[in-house]
Image (cartoon, rainbow, N blue to C red):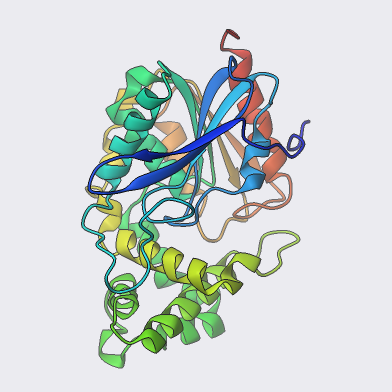
Length: 321
């Protein structure tokens, strides 16, 4: 079974102007004449990484990665109380994907994603199914309120000490309510010290609830104050608005993509995103195949190898240009 491919640098990149003054950083790696494959990063707000380029066979793929609005090398960043997030929604991101596809002259592509990127990929495919050849989705999410409440509240039963510190970061009067919304307000506070403490506590909790991943170690990205600020601001923005999806929207629209071939990869020990979500999605998707990685959580173990193998499997069914 393949693991990731060797490190690779982009053969082209750029900043694409989309709507509302946003510029998206994008890059392409691999073979310009290869099968187009889009990768959607998680978060929201985590940005693409150099490591994600390595999921794609450079001899067969024209892999396209980009930083979603407000994060990574896209501009403006969602940092500080003056950042306008009104034009940063799932609908805007779906529109950005189509704008990028058109800009790159791609007719149809394989769509892949991780974690939040799965919810975004499904929302995109359900709206633009004629542009999707196949899908490869890892750490499967559906952007539901149940998932958000699980991560921000119910999972405190698994990590009580870490959750106590997490919930202690918001005013006492708000601790029984929507914790993502409470943190979103703190992250927009005019006082920089308030914002910094909220971002630190949010990211500590993010690190805690993925800590059952095999070979886990604290994320080095969270040591960067700017990354913490942008990431926490965007996650809480999306989660406090139910990912800008109607409740149950993705499951209710699975018939639109029923014939699109897909591989779903999920860790059996993924506490952040329990297995019931991919199980239900796979059950409603006749053309999909669910791969449960027995030694993985929200990543780790054999997760990367299975995701890469899933991309290779979908490539095998698409003619190379």
